[in-house]
Length: 280
View 1 (spheres, rainbow, N blue to C red):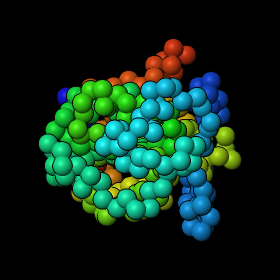
View 2 (spheres, rainbow, N blue to C red; view 1 turned 90 degrees about the vertical axis):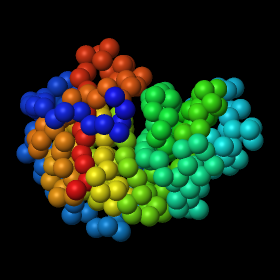
View 3 (tube, rainbow, N blue to C red; view 1 turned 180 degrees about the vertical axis):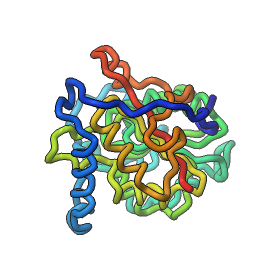
View 4 (tube, rainbow, N blue to C red; view 1 turned 135 degrees about the vertical axis):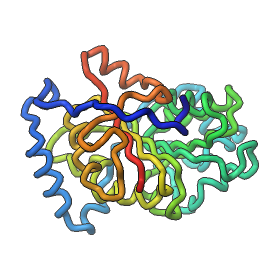
């Protein structure tokens, strides 16, 4: 199965009660926190970052991809100064980036937000070469590694960039994307950091604007509180239809490779939850 297909909806009920991550989990409390967040004035919420950049070691392969001009076809904003957040202000069309590739501009387009070290994204692009993929990330080791792997595999349907996903989405035209992926995002588990979670009503309204009608938002997490949080946010947005039925999580689709974070979580006994929503 590729991500052009959707799994058959079936019952996959949301978890109840808590776990060791969130011992005081409560759906009513989550709902109240979301309502409180929705009352935050826009002038404040727009300035809140959904990510934290960390200084990490660059492998020789990642550094080569980030600095060698031969990797420019894979990194959209290649050649920037290492250690700085990439500039996405001039990127206003992702489809046009593929005009000189075998797929051309009109192939289905997937944007993955926060692809980590790139393993899952590269595997998806390799498995479905009829679809174009763009990944955006802020951590240079992952950006360089993904580009290096794409180059080694000879992929022509994958491009990555360094930058803020919200800034990029704000630049893109409406009805531009077929799929938006958000796999194992930072759960920002402390209550005071909930405002930094990517999935909020305001940010998901922006995602919905950029998705084509019929397009899909797909998220996955192994953090129970965030899973329930996303379910609450998205089930209450009229622009999205839960493909598993309101109140349910989707079965894990075959087209989503397991990420290293998911495998690590499984080693600690954590479950994972998938959410697939279609723009209506």
